[in-house]
Amino acid sequence: MAVFARCGSQTLFAPRLYSAAVRHFTHGTNILYQTKSGQGTFFSPLQKVMLPPDAFHGKVAFITGGGTGLGKGMTNAFSNLGAECVIASRKLDVLNHTAEEISSKTGNKVHAVQCDVKDPESVTNAVSRLIEVAGHPDVIINNAAGNFISPSERLSANAWKAITDIVLNGTAFVTLQIGKELIKAQKGAAFLAITTVYAESGSGFVVPSASAKAGVDALCKSLAAEWGRYGMRFNVIQPGPIKTKGAFSRLDPTGIFEKEMIQRIPCGRLGTVEEIANLATYLCSDYANWVNGAVIRMDGGEYVSMAGEFNELRKVIIYKENCNKRLQNGKLLSGVLIS
View 1 (cartoon, rainbow, N blue to C red):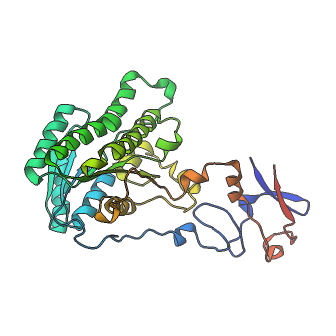
View 2 (cartoon, rainbow, N blue to C red):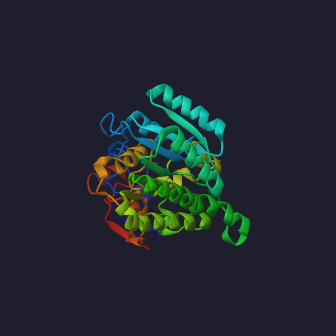
View 3 (cartoon, helix red, strand yellow):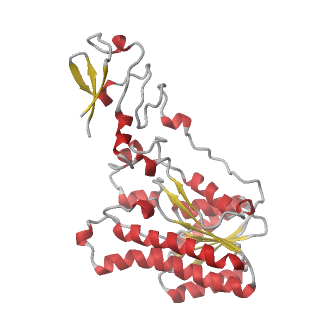
């Protein structure tokens, strides 16, 4: 659907008509309702910790994929709030660097444990090490992930397995192994999984990831129903696009998709690691003790903005004041044509 504005006898493509000094309605990073300011002005991220200090004092948080990106950001947030953190991934050198960096800033212990989540034996060993160094966890965050972009007709069985083994099987192995240990110890805990908005909507070109993360959503909702009796809660965050070094360097190395992503997000910007970390700490805190089985979308409105053809009307700019001063031919905008 193309959107055009009619000015007298002249038809012009609407997005090119905008003038920041007049009332208008569009989307993107520069303009928003009746103002020359961008959405970023209204929805600028707060770089502050949401919960009170020591909200996790005396608690242990276990974070897979905790060495980089979102995992590192969440580890930093939990550590700042008093938690003793244990971070896990395959790359022990990266984990050690992150653990030292965060611990030196927060003054709280951060342990590094090597773990390949797709290997059940490695998971068992990592969980044993977790309990040995820090005790049974109060918070478990499944954040380990893998992804690549490919036309689905080119996917091999190995390509499919490479992603689903990490995302779905890895999450299941970690969750079940820790869950069994918690049940034996008669200890409750808060579990959180990080998936994606396209786990719900589906997405071309990342079918293994979309399928696996949809499975993670179902896993968490199922265990929320079953293991509540053991004092365990399970929730999910579905982030929209977050600019992290790892994800963007792999999936968007040229940066050509970043602008397109921003243009379809009503809040007019990408999300931040700190925003996800704030939601993660809330969901795993005692403030959220009655939140169980929730799948929370945090995407600046991207998901809803892509549903329904009439959302394209965001691109229409309607001049109602002083249009004759803004158009070169001096004629008022008489209406809007959609064709």
